[in-house]
Length: 210
Image (tube, rainbow, N blue to C red):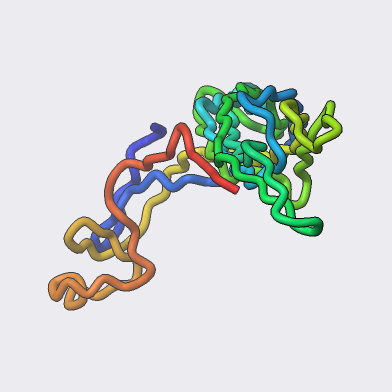
């Protein structure tokens, strides 16, 4: 990429540093009607996991695809016994329903170039305090077999561009250290400013659970 790093005094190092082109966020409303296998009396817990399966840089935009995995744990009605005038015992089972919802979207990032840039998912998950799951068609005994799930998924996408820089540095075992001394490198004491030597690795898919 680009011209060969120019020669410098000392021990020059040529690196590709990921420079940030831009970052943007978008929200997607996901709504589903879910039928449970058995009549339920209560939703016990709801877990949501977002897995970004692809992220593609386009001109001034980034498009992405994801799978939203939803797991609903609920209590079934089972058997109802009257212990006395004040106490009713419900003996049921704890069951779950898991479903997968594909979603897609895009963000606008000025200057993004598919020829040179890479995208990185900074965040993908539930918008805090923005999830609604409610029973529908509740029977007279309080049981239900259908629920409506609504949630807002937040995606934050960053675009990075490998940028060539040249540094005067001392090299250690697998590291290059601007400002480090040869004694530090020889002794294996790598200062905090050291840079790893090697290609830049950016994940194509990341999983978030909220």
